[in-house]
Image (cartoon, rainbow, N blue to C red; front, side, top):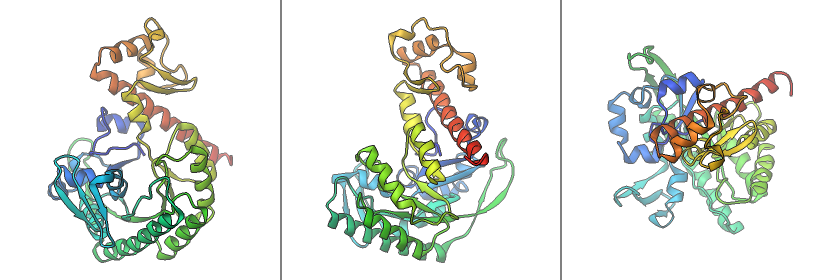
Length: 341
């Protein structure tokens, strides 16, 4: 899932995203809650209509973003008090509030409110955080079941002309820090609460990549294989293929879009830093094996020129290519699965 934090994948319009074959985007509850506000989006008919996106949307609960505020937050049993990174205003968010916001946004898949455990964390701290997340998961589910509703999407405009009704699904999130025994317990108890899908959260928070893989592999053993299994915030193209082989069904990551803005591009020949002088007169396409519109039309020299000149078009082209490369990776994964690989 490409990340569209502010109801936008930076630098790429929705029609291009559709042409690339993207089926689902991720939006961020925390950021949309602060700006333009959940009520403003609700009055526009929900997130699908607001951003003119007729395909699926997943919203995360905002737990990770609140976690990243560090000194600007205070966690209690009832919820989280935090200060906006935009203007310093104070806000209080309970699990019920996070679910209410996501119901109003109208995403197809919404996430239970969780506490993301920092790294490193002592075993007792990891347990306390896991227990909090489990209690919040139960509260999230209770509120969702009392307030779930059919969510209309579609705007009657151009590419979003068909009216439809979609029912939201609430996913639970497994936490437990880097403790394998806690991950097992968190997975089993989250499954006992009962959700249509399960996410593995609290990773990519500074731990070594080998440890990430170890935790993912050990956690998967305890999640039902007949429900979607979602690994949050991961990863490189190589990691995506590896996790899919393990049994992960869904992933999201800011890497393809963030790397693009810094001139780092993924290709079949390895990563390329297009800002380097070696590409000044390189007539070759960025990736000769890629069929995206950027690789079919433009040279490395031109892409390097755009980046060196700080042209906005550089961000657009780089992002289109990186997204295309990630999508091609996923298509290869799906093809391998179909062939029994």
